[in-house]
Length: 138
Image (cartoon, rainbow, N blue to C red; front, side, top):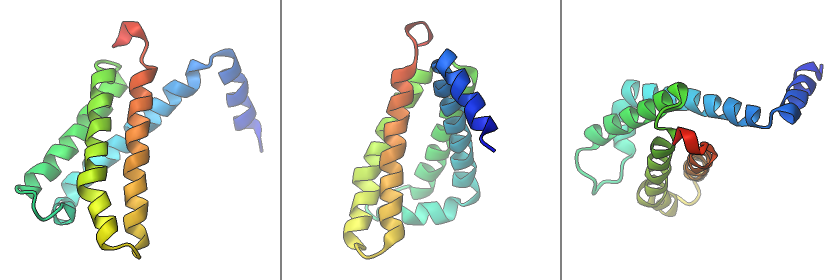
């Protein structure tokens, strides 16, 4: 029952970077899913964008392309740091421009709060990945 956990724990003790690599690939998988969702649900996502921002569909597709680019950078282990920093900045911008205003306008709507903190956590994850890149791979 605990075999996968104990095996991973022992492997991580021998090679601490193993968990960082696993975490990066899990994050890259999530970015691939986010990219896909930004294309198949483009109209819905565009409708969530703050009213004063123009070209909503363009920015929806641009975000999808950014998610795809970051996922590819992580998977091929090239340009990981600049890609992750750019993604972290994008998430933080969304926190302030998109999610915080939505929460303030709908304070009793739980999914708005969850979305806001998912964006904040994802920005933190992106910065952690950027900081985990070894000097030779930046």
